[in-house]
Image (cartoon, rainbow, N blue to C red; front, side, top):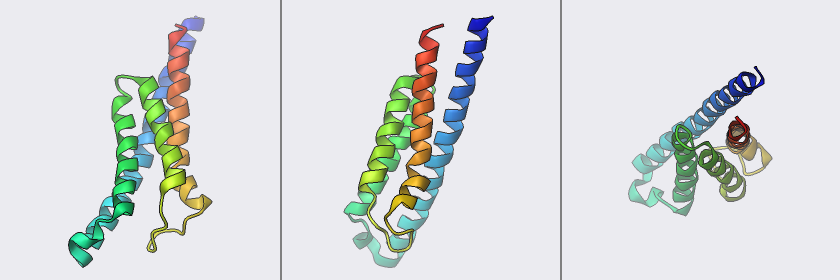
Length: 129
């Protein structure tokens, strides 16, 4: 009985982490694609700068973590936590968006951190089954 209860808990944690992670990464990816395409249409290839590439790589790491979560929860948790840390330290201030401060990380990084911690806890609990 205890094992089935622990199994249900790990399944719920995994589901919650997937929903939070995909929602956070999908939100940022939507913002990023819209902003980058508008900049590209306005400026052409000059719009592709180091900041655009950095944000794309950080978002790609988060997306990779969400995709990997169906196979390896530990790797997904690590990728999402790395993505959250990078989002907090490397997001440059972009004029049309919110100025660089804690609010940016709360919107972009915190959900990834929560999802990563949930994946790691789910992985740890599933090892005990």
